[in-house]
Image 1 (cartoon, protein in one colour):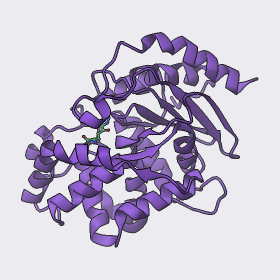
Image 2 (spheres, protein in one colour):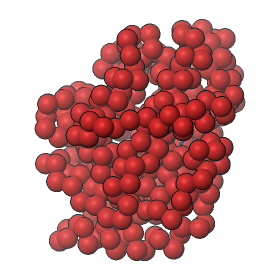
Image 3 (cartoon, rainbow, N blue to C red):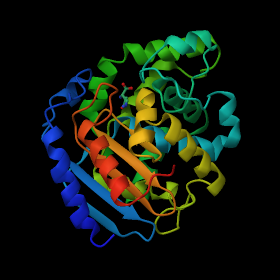
Length: 305
Ligand code: DON
Protein backbone atom coordinates (compact mmCIF):
# COMPACT_ATOMS: atom_id res chain seq x y z
CA UNK A 1 0.00 0.00 0.00
CA UNK A 2 1.76 3.15 -1.22
CA UNK A 3 -0.14 5.88 0.48
CA UNK A 4 -2.73 4.79 3.01
CA UNK A 5 -3.98 8.31 3.72
CA UNK A 6 -4.69 8.80 0.02
CA UNK A 7 -6.49 5.45 -0.16
CA UNK A 8 -8.65 6.42 2.83
CA UNK A 9 -9.56 9.77 1.21
CA UNK A 10 -10.57 8.00 -2.01
CA UNK A 11 -12.68 5.46 -0.14
CA UNK A 12 -14.56 8.22 1.68
CA UNK A 13 -15.16 10.05 -1.62
CA UNK A 14 -16.63 6.88 -3.11
CA UNK A 15 -19.03 6.17 -0.24
CA UNK A 16 -20.13 9.76 0.48
CA UNK A 17 -23.04 9.49 -2.03
CA UNK A 18 -24.56 6.79 0.20
CA UNK A 19 -25.30 9.39 2.86
CA UNK A 20 -29.04 10.05 2.67
CA UNK A 21 -29.93 6.40 2.07
CA UNK A 22 -29.92 5.32 5.74
CA UNK A 23 -31.54 6.49 8.98
CA UNK A 24 -30.05 7.68 12.26
CA UNK A 25 -30.98 5.70 15.39
CA UNK A 26 -34.42 7.18 16.02
CA UNK A 27 -35.20 5.05 19.06
CA UNK A 28 -32.76 7.03 21.21
CA UNK A 29 -33.89 10.67 20.77
CA UNK A 30 -30.48 12.06 21.74
CA UNK A 31 -28.93 10.15 18.81
CA UNK A 32 -31.69 10.82 16.28
CA UNK A 33 -30.84 14.50 15.90
CA UNK A 34 -27.21 14.07 14.96
CA UNK A 35 -25.99 15.66 11.70
CA UNK A 36 -26.03 12.73 9.22
CA UNK A 37 -23.48 14.33 6.89
CA UNK A 38 -20.47 13.04 8.77
CA UNK A 39 -18.02 10.36 7.72
CA UNK A 40 -14.64 9.50 9.19
CA UNK A 41 -12.16 6.64 9.14
CA UNK A 42 -8.94 5.80 11.00
CA UNK A 43 -6.49 2.92 10.83
CA UNK A 44 -3.88 2.08 13.43
CA UNK A 45 -1.04 -0.33 12.72
CA UNK A 46 0.53 -2.57 15.34
CA UNK A 47 3.49 -0.17 15.63
CA UNK A 48 1.13 2.65 16.58
CA UNK A 49 1.15 4.55 13.30
CA UNK A 50 -2.25 6.10 12.64
CA UNK A 51 -3.77 7.04 9.27
CA UNK A 52 -7.06 8.88 9.00
CA UNK A 53 -9.44 10.79 6.75
CA UNK A 54 -12.68 12.78 7.00
CA UNK A 55 -14.29 13.35 10.39
CA UNK A 56 -11.88 11.04 12.21
CA UNK A 57 -11.43 13.53 15.07
CA UNK A 58 -15.13 14.06 15.79
CA UNK A 59 -16.37 12.26 18.91
CA UNK A 60 -19.49 10.10 18.60
CA UNK A 61 -21.51 7.78 20.81
CA UNK A 62 -19.73 4.40 20.78
CA UNK A 63 -22.96 2.51 21.68
CA UNK A 64 -22.59 -1.25 21.18
CA UNK A 65 -18.88 -0.99 20.38
CA UNK A 66 -18.51 -0.82 24.18
CA UNK A 67 -19.52 -4.50 24.26
CA UNK A 68 -16.09 -5.54 22.94
CA UNK A 69 -14.35 -3.82 25.83
CA UNK A 70 -16.75 -4.97 28.54
CA UNK A 71 -16.38 -8.55 27.28
CA UNK A 72 -12.60 -8.14 27.46
CA UNK A 73 -12.81 -6.86 31.05
CA UNK A 74 -15.07 -9.76 31.99
CA UNK A 75 -12.82 -12.36 30.32
CA UNK A 76 -9.91 -11.03 32.33
CA UNK A 77 -11.87 -11.58 35.55
CA UNK A 78 -13.85 -14.76 34.81
CA UNK A 79 -11.71 -16.44 32.15
CA UNK A 80 -13.56 -19.20 30.25
CA UNK A 81 -16.25 -19.47 32.97
CA UNK A 82 -18.04 -16.75 31.01
CA UNK A 83 -19.17 -19.28 28.43
CA UNK A 84 -21.28 -21.11 30.99
CA UNK A 85 -23.62 -18.11 31.10
CA UNK A 86 -23.51 -16.78 27.54
CA UNK A 87 -23.24 -18.57 24.19
CA UNK A 88 -21.15 -17.87 21.11
CA UNK A 89 -23.53 -18.49 18.27
CA UNK A 90 -24.97 -15.88 15.92
CA UNK A 91 -28.56 -15.05 16.78
CA UNK A 92 -29.91 -14.22 13.33
CA UNK A 93 -32.27 -11.84 15.17
CA UNK A 94 -32.37 -8.09 15.83
CA UNK A 95 -29.86 -6.93 18.44
CA UNK A 96 -32.58 -6.33 21.05
CA UNK A 97 -34.70 -9.41 20.37
CA UNK A 98 -36.27 -11.43 23.20
CA UNK A 99 -37.38 -14.43 21.15
CA UNK A 100 -34.52 -16.88 21.73
CA UNK A 101 -34.05 -16.00 25.41
CA UNK A 102 -37.42 -17.53 26.25
CA UNK A 103 -36.83 -20.82 24.44
CA UNK A 104 -33.16 -21.04 25.50
CA UNK A 105 -33.63 -20.72 29.28
CA UNK A 106 -32.30 -17.18 29.64
CA UNK A 107 -28.87 -17.94 28.11
CA UNK A 108 -28.11 -15.23 25.53
CA UNK A 109 -26.83 -16.46 22.17
CA UNK A 110 -23.66 -14.32 22.32
CA UNK A 111 -22.09 -11.41 24.25
CA UNK A 112 -22.78 -8.84 21.51
CA UNK A 113 -26.57 -8.91 21.30
CA UNK A 114 -28.15 -6.75 24.02
CA UNK A 115 -29.04 -9.75 26.20
CA UNK A 116 -25.43 -10.96 26.19
CA UNK A 117 -24.01 -7.51 26.83
CA UNK A 118 -26.41 -6.95 29.73
CA UNK A 119 -25.35 -10.30 31.17
CA UNK A 120 -21.68 -9.29 30.89
CA UNK A 121 -22.52 -6.00 32.70
CA UNK A 122 -24.23 -8.06 35.40
CA UNK A 123 -21.08 -10.18 35.77
CA UNK A 124 -18.91 -7.04 36.01
CA UNK A 125 -21.29 -5.56 38.58
CA UNK A 126 -20.77 -8.67 40.75
CA UNK A 127 -16.98 -8.47 40.76
CA UNK A 128 -15.91 -4.83 40.13
CA UNK A 129 -16.23 -2.06 42.68
CA UNK A 130 -16.77 0.56 39.93
CA UNK A 131 -17.33 -1.07 36.52
CA UNK A 132 -18.12 2.19 34.70
CA UNK A 133 -14.95 3.81 35.94
CA UNK A 134 -12.93 0.70 35.10
CA UNK A 135 -14.21 0.69 31.52
CA UNK A 136 -13.48 4.41 31.10
CA UNK A 137 -9.98 3.97 32.52
CA UNK A 138 -9.28 1.09 30.14
CA UNK A 139 -10.44 3.12 27.13
CA UNK A 140 -8.45 6.14 28.27
CA UNK A 141 -5.27 4.11 28.70
CA UNK A 142 -5.66 2.28 25.38
CA UNK A 143 -6.50 5.37 23.34
CA UNK A 144 -4.11 7.72 25.11
CA UNK A 145 -6.87 10.30 25.72
CA UNK A 146 -7.48 10.71 29.44
CA UNK A 147 -10.48 12.98 28.88
CA UNK A 148 -12.75 10.34 27.36
CA UNK A 149 -16.12 10.53 29.10
CA UNK A 150 -19.75 9.47 29.00
CA UNK A 151 -22.30 11.84 27.45
CA UNK A 152 -24.79 12.10 30.33
CA UNK A 153 -27.58 13.34 28.01
CA UNK A 154 -27.31 10.24 25.78
CA UNK A 155 -27.19 7.94 28.83
CA UNK A 156 -30.34 9.60 30.23
CA UNK A 157 -32.10 9.36 26.88
CA UNK A 158 -31.23 5.67 26.66
CA UNK A 159 -32.53 5.06 30.22
CA UNK A 160 -35.81 6.77 29.33
CA UNK A 161 -36.23 4.28 26.47
CA UNK A 162 -34.90 1.17 28.16
CA UNK A 163 -38.13 -0.84 28.53
CA UNK A 164 -36.94 -3.48 26.07
CA UNK A 165 -33.53 -3.91 27.69
CA UNK A 166 -35.29 -4.12 31.07
CA UNK A 167 -37.53 -6.89 29.68
CA UNK A 168 -34.45 -8.75 28.43
CA UNK A 169 -32.71 -8.45 31.82
CA UNK A 170 -35.80 -9.51 33.81
CA UNK A 171 -36.30 -12.50 31.52
CA UNK A 172 -32.72 -13.61 32.26
CA UNK A 173 -33.39 -13.02 35.98
CA UNK A 174 -36.44 -15.27 35.79
CA UNK A 175 -34.10 -18.03 34.63
CA UNK A 176 -31.58 -17.27 37.44
CA UNK A 177 -29.05 -16.01 34.92
CA UNK A 178 -28.85 -12.44 36.28
CA UNK A 179 -27.59 -11.71 39.80
CA UNK A 180 -27.79 -7.97 40.41
CA UNK A 181 -30.47 -5.32 40.58
CA UNK A 182 -31.79 -4.85 37.02
CA UNK A 183 -32.02 -1.04 37.23
CA UNK A 184 -28.42 -0.78 38.46
CA UNK A 185 -27.13 -2.90 35.58
CA UNK A 186 -29.27 -1.02 33.01
CA UNK A 187 -27.77 2.28 34.24
CA UNK A 188 -24.28 0.88 33.95
CA UNK A 189 -24.95 -0.45 30.42
CA UNK A 190 -26.46 2.89 29.32
CA UNK A 191 -23.36 4.68 30.59
CA UNK A 192 -21.06 2.33 28.65
CA UNK A 193 -23.05 2.85 25.43
CA UNK A 194 -23.02 6.65 25.90
CA UNK A 195 -19.22 6.92 26.03
CA UNK A 196 -17.94 9.33 23.39
CA UNK A 197 -14.85 8.60 21.32
CA UNK A 198 -13.61 9.43 17.85
CA UNK A 199 -12.39 7.10 15.07
CA UNK A 200 -8.70 7.60 15.90
CA UNK A 201 -9.24 6.83 19.59
CA UNK A 202 -11.34 3.74 18.85
CA UNK A 203 -8.83 2.42 16.29
CA UNK A 204 -6.02 2.84 18.85
CA UNK A 205 -8.08 1.33 21.66
CA UNK A 206 -8.88 -1.78 19.56
CA UNK A 207 -5.33 -2.56 18.48
CA UNK A 208 -4.93 -5.25 21.16
CA UNK A 209 -7.32 -7.39 19.10
CA UNK A 210 -4.88 -7.25 16.17
CA UNK A 211 -1.82 -7.50 18.41
CA UNK A 212 -2.24 -10.71 20.43
CA UNK A 213 -3.91 -8.90 23.30
CA UNK A 214 -1.30 -6.23 23.89
CA UNK A 215 -1.84 -2.44 23.86
CA UNK A 216 0.16 -0.14 21.58
CA UNK A 217 2.88 0.58 24.11
CA UNK A 218 2.71 -3.03 25.40
CA UNK A 219 2.02 -1.64 28.86
CA UNK A 220 -1.41 -3.23 29.06
CA UNK A 221 -1.98 -6.90 28.28
CA UNK A 222 -5.73 -6.51 27.83
CA UNK A 223 -6.27 -10.19 27.01
CA UNK A 224 -4.20 -13.30 26.43
CA UNK A 225 -3.47 -14.20 22.79
CA UNK A 226 -5.74 -17.21 23.25
CA UNK A 227 -8.69 -15.07 24.39
CA UNK A 228 -8.09 -12.62 21.52
CA UNK A 229 -8.47 -15.42 18.98
CA UNK A 230 -11.79 -16.33 20.55
CA UNK A 231 -13.09 -12.75 20.82
CA UNK A 232 -12.19 -12.17 17.15
CA UNK A 233 -14.03 -15.37 16.20
CA UNK A 234 -17.17 -14.19 18.01
CA UNK A 235 -16.79 -10.73 16.43
CA UNK A 236 -16.57 -12.30 12.97
CA UNK A 237 -19.67 -14.41 13.50
CA UNK A 238 -21.83 -12.19 15.74
CA UNK A 239 -20.42 -8.62 15.78
CA UNK A 240 -22.90 -7.19 13.30
CA UNK A 241 -25.98 -8.99 14.59
CA UNK A 242 -28.24 -10.41 11.88
CA UNK A 243 -26.03 -8.76 9.25
CA UNK A 244 -22.91 -10.65 10.40
CA UNK A 245 -23.07 -12.98 7.40
CA UNK A 246 -23.33 -10.09 4.96
CA UNK A 247 -20.46 -8.29 6.70
CA UNK A 248 -18.28 -11.43 6.52
CA UNK A 249 -19.16 -11.76 2.85
CA UNK A 250 -18.48 -8.13 1.95
CA UNK A 251 -15.73 -7.12 4.41
CA UNK A 252 -14.35 -10.41 5.72
CA UNK A 253 -13.07 -9.07 9.05
CA UNK A 254 -13.97 -9.43 12.73
CA UNK A 255 -15.99 -6.29 13.49
CA UNK A 256 -18.37 -4.59 15.90
CA UNK A 257 -20.95 -1.95 15.14
CA UNK A 258 -22.89 0.52 17.25
CA UNK A 259 -26.10 2.44 16.57
CA UNK A 260 -24.12 5.68 16.90
CA UNK A 261 -22.83 4.77 13.40
CA UNK A 262 -19.37 3.54 14.38
CA UNK A 263 -17.87 0.21 13.33
CA UNK A 264 -14.52 -1.20 14.44
CA UNK A 265 -12.83 -3.91 12.39
CA UNK A 266 -9.73 -5.97 13.06
CA UNK A 267 -7.09 -7.07 10.56
CA UNK A 268 -5.25 -9.61 12.74
CA UNK A 269 -1.50 -9.04 12.99
CA UNK A 270 -1.74 -5.80 11.01
CA UNK A 271 -4.32 -3.10 11.74
CA UNK A 272 -7.34 -2.01 13.71
CA UNK A 273 -9.82 0.23 11.92
CA UNK A 274 -12.69 2.48 12.95
CA UNK A 275 -15.16 4.02 10.55
CA UNK A 276 -18.06 6.29 11.46
CA UNK A 277 -21.09 7.67 9.68
CA UNK A 278 -24.34 8.11 11.65
CA UNK A 279 -26.91 6.77 9.18
CA UNK A 280 -27.75 3.10 9.67
CA UNK A 281 -29.03 0.32 7.44
CA UNK A 282 -32.00 -1.93 8.33
CA UNK A 283 -29.87 -4.08 10.63
CA UNK A 284 -28.70 -1.06 12.67
CA UNK A 285 -25.18 -0.88 11.21
CA UNK A 286 -23.60 2.19 9.57
CA UNK A 287 -24.56 2.12 5.92
CA UNK A 288 -21.71 4.21 4.48
CA UNK A 289 -19.36 2.77 7.12
CA UNK A 290 -19.95 -0.81 5.98
CA UNK A 291 -19.36 0.22 2.35
CA UNK A 292 -16.13 1.99 3.33
CA UNK A 293 -14.86 -1.11 5.14
CA UNK A 294 -15.69 -3.25 2.12
CA UNK A 295 -13.53 -1.00 -0.07
CA UNK A 296 -10.76 -0.86 2.52
CA UNK A 297 -10.66 -4.62 2.90
CA UNK A 298 -10.29 -4.93 -0.87
CA UNK A 299 -7.59 -2.24 -1.01
CA UNK A 300 -5.56 -3.88 1.76
CA UNK A 301 -6.36 -7.40 0.53
CA UNK A 302 -7.22 -8.20 4.12
CA UNK A 303 -10.27 -10.47 4.27
CA UNK A 304 -9.54 -13.24 6.77
CA UNK A 305 -11.42 -15.71 4.58
O1 DON B 1 -29.06 -1.20 23.88
C1 DON B 1 -29.23 -0.29 23.06
O2 DON B 1 -30.33 -0.16 22.61
C2 DON B 1 -28.14 0.63 22.56
N1 DON B 1 -27.77 1.62 23.44
C3 DON B 1 -26.96 -0.08 22.04
C4 DON B 1 -27.37 -0.87 20.87
C5 DON B 1 -26.46 -0.84 19.71
O3 DON B 1 -25.59 -0.02 19.53
C6 DON B 1 -26.81 -1.86 18.72
N2 DON B 1 -25.89 -1.79 17.63
N3 DON B 1 -25.90 -1.78 16.50
